[in-house]
Amino acid sequence: MGAGSPDASGGRDIRDVAVVGAGLSGCLMAVLLARRGYRVRVFERRPDPRLGAGDEGRSINLGLSQRGINALRHAGLLDRVLAHAAPMRGRVVHLPDGDLGYHPYGTSDDQILRSVLRHDLNVVLLDAAESAGVALRFDARLADLDKADGAVTLRFEDGAVVEAGTVIGADGAFSTVRARMQRGEPADYHQEFLPWGYKELSIAAGAPGDRRADPESLHVWPADGGLVVAHPNADRSLTGTIFLPLTGPGGFDALRTPDAVRAMITARFPDLTGLVPDVVEQFLSQPTGHLVTVRTAPWHWRGRVVLLGDACHAVYPFYGQGMNSAFEDCVILDGCLDRNAADHAAAFAEYQAIRKADTDVLADLSAANFVELRDRLSSPLFLARKKADLALNRLLGRRWVPLYTMISHTTTPYAEALRRSRRQNATLAWLACATAAAGTLLIHRLSRQGK
Ligand SMILES: Cc1cc2nc3c(=O)[nH]c(=O)nc-3n(C[C@H](O)[C@H](O)[C@H](O)COP(=O)(O)OP(=O)(O)OC[C@H]3O[C@@H](n4cnc5c(N)ncnc54)[C@H](O)[C@@H]3O)c2cc1C
Image 1 (cartoon, rainbow, N blue to C red):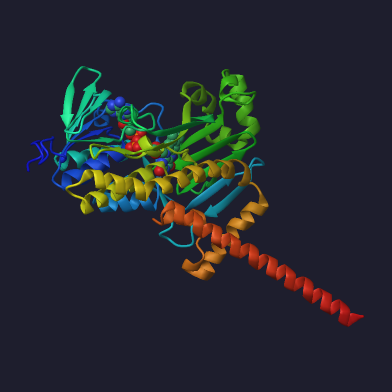
Image 2 (cartoon, rainbow, N blue to C red; image 1 turned 90 degrees about the horizontal axis):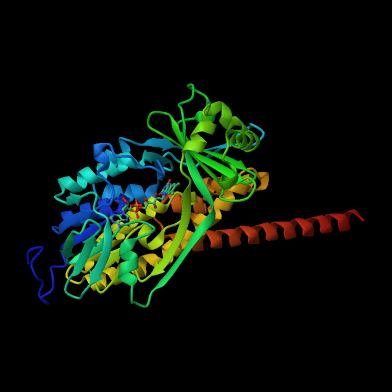
């Protein structure tokens, strides 16, 4: 059966695939499908980023962790991506009093994250897709989608009409494919905006040895009512993201003049003014981005349409897992297609069954990590707990793995990682109680002997 020809049921060949969205998951999935011998066309609303087009208002660089690394390795693209990446071995915490704290990400050399520019990553993926035989169409914004059992028809804003045997919706958090696929179907959809937004800041490379701009660490500035996170770039500069409430006295809405911005930065992030001399100008010229969590079901329709990445599970960026989980989707869907090559309905159902519970957990963890980064990084008790976690990991190896390690440095399914972490916490609480009880008993006995 040739791709593009009718299948046995008289419908269009299921291996004739249209991917909507040439972002991160769309490109990676296109590569994997082309390698399976599918005919793949990718449609992207933006211009080709390889021709120098901008990517305004989107996060500039991203933290790649084990799940993303594993997916890129699966596609044979890891080395090409790592050639553009900067290592992040731990977190430098810029405390409000000017002190610096440092927390390593793990206990061994392979427990590091990589920071990569979204543009560079996208270009590697687009080049790989093209080399694998994928047809790429840019400036093609999907406007509508007609579902039918035999084929799916895509209608684009410029009037183009395309028919495909299978459609993959990799068109991000505000997915048109998702909306049209679920139209008229019994479907759940829950979207939650964080009342905080973000702007990006460029931070020039620091002097060699300056820990305030260490190019091998993630940097975090926790503050009362604000948060800045910065990733290093391969050229030793950093890209910072400033997160603030959208409204209220210290929020973006109130920060519209140079004086107001300068006063806020000086009060909340004092050492940023030294590192970014034009911080006020940058702040006022950058757009404000919004952050959204999406939970939805179903993720697929009758073996003809399926969703990937942010289109089915957008999460807040605070665990650095949105792209990593979108890449992991591609590997899991690829495995489901392997096991159900002739039956996409079965493949897509299996994919959602494996994945949805995990990405729901990721949404919760990502929201919780916002509070951790913002409020707890300067708490001595919290930091002591983090140190104890790593020390127990060093002592007990795989029998004690901190939650952060399981999420970022392994491919343990998210829900399983959370269950394991809760069991560990319960054991720790039990041990603490047992030690306290034993101590009390001992003191009691000693005091009786002394009488
Ligand atoms: C501030 C910030 C920081 C982040 N940091 C990290 C991080 O460190 N690590 C991490 O893992 N994740 C991070 N993320 C999350 C990550 O960016 C996303 O999870 C990831 O991009 C999702 O990939 P995707 O392929 O699903 O969607 P996208 O990469 O958003 O791609 C969707 C594509 O679809 C296109 N499209 C949309 N609508 C249409 C249409 N109608 N027709 C045609 N094309 C369309 C878009 O133009 C886009 O190219 C961060 C996000 C933000 C906002």
